Image (cartoon, rainbow, N blue to C red):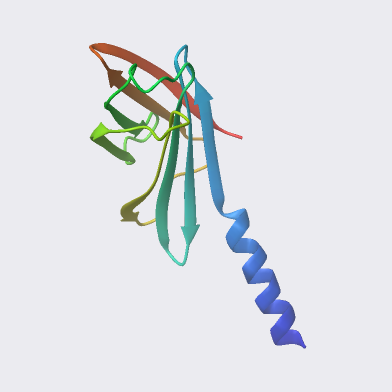
Amino acid sequence: MVFLILLLLFACQAKDNDLIFSGEGENWSSKVTVSQTKGDETYRILINYKEYSKEDVPTFSYNVEAKNSGVLNFGENNASLNEEGIYQSNLPISNSPSTSVKDELVIRVEWNGKREEFTLINK
């Protein structure tokens, strides 16, 4: 019985270790989920173009970095949106846990010769 209770507590704790950073600019919004489990940190990103039509954004580039520590830094060139104007990816990056609830992330999106930058905060 004690083993089952401990197992349940650890399972619930894993979900509590997800840090969700979100924010939006004039044209884009984004959410980055940082999962910290078993000494590793992994990332998922969702980027949404607010006024999407397929002709508007054939491809785009983005870069995300930690504003405070600079430890977190990832991005992609030639990314594309789905039919709803959303890009979503589980990133093949794994680091030792370094992101905290106090961190702020900055995302830069470039498309069609335009650029937008905005801050993502933990919510």
